[in-house]
Length: 69
Image 1: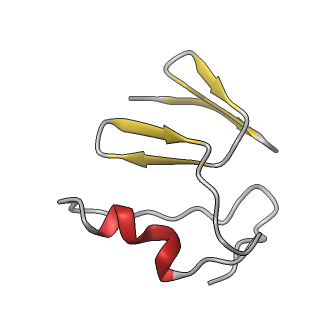
Image 2: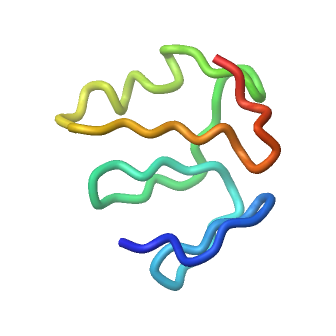
């Protein structure tokens, strides 16, 4: 899996462009991921990820660095 392009509101992965927030979990892309409170992050927003057997968790803060935890 290769992230080919990233700009405000858009990410291209393996030739497919996404225009919404997304999760990349292992080898899967889960598009249209939304948090309960806009640019804030809560445990409820990521509980689905924490139930999966993962080794590494990377959280991006967005193009403008506006995500808060």
